Image (cartoon, one colour):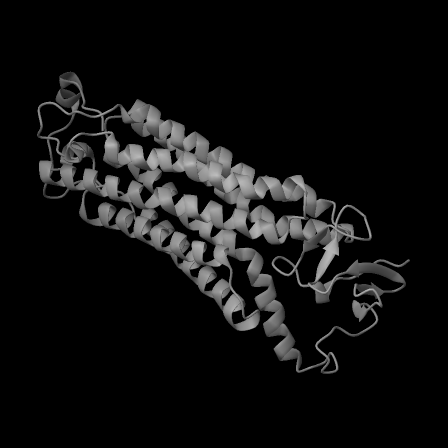
Length: 361
């Protein structure tokens, strides 16, 4: 927090500790709505994995931990707004409120950084089920979590070491603060976060587009994954408000309301985007139950436009209808790159193979 020069303090109006001007509830509304959606999406994802697919993997549990940190960060932001003065002008705050607000700022960052990191790692790990063997996509999916993790861990460590003692971060009564300038640190983290968010979103797109599926289905899957663009946009907006708070104003509580609102939105959107691809499978499962076994009780699709699945002597299944055939192995994977035999892209985590519609031959 920048210390305002005396002439700036002199220009402030007289403090109003009784009935100060107050920000509207936008921050609380945005935080609560995105938090509820994030938790619901995680619960539904785990329902799919535990009850429908009856298996979980590391990325699922990493996302659970990420959600814990995101919940903590959002609650910290809401409490700071409602209890510690983030909805008031800085000149209407007592010294105790200013100190509490700085403590809340520290706690929020301590939760937010691991929340966004673990969310990215979970998504990157889930890509390993999509990535063909020996592909660049797979190599990047294996390497990226280490790069993202190491880079983000540096900023998290700096948060705890930029002030000595650590209480100098919020103890505004000290005459000399042994703290690093947090402006370049926060900007570096925010910019790197936008870059990694964009990288995580863009990484699977080329492979999905080259999958041996009809164009409209490839575009549908890409659209499903492109929900991640909302996280990139939220992170970019956060940079805009970060610049205002760090360089353009000393009324950091009043102007910082927008910044903290987008911190909460970004954190929770990451969870939502990481879980959305699983929800289509849930919808298909519920729709199948409502259909009451119209597929003839065989568990497969039926009808003139539906895909048919049948084994081949070589152990590789085919999906076909209307004269067109795609090859699929026993794990439900469709070949990518237009080749008949491997590598295969695992579609079970992002698309229901039973829904595949093929074009006329």
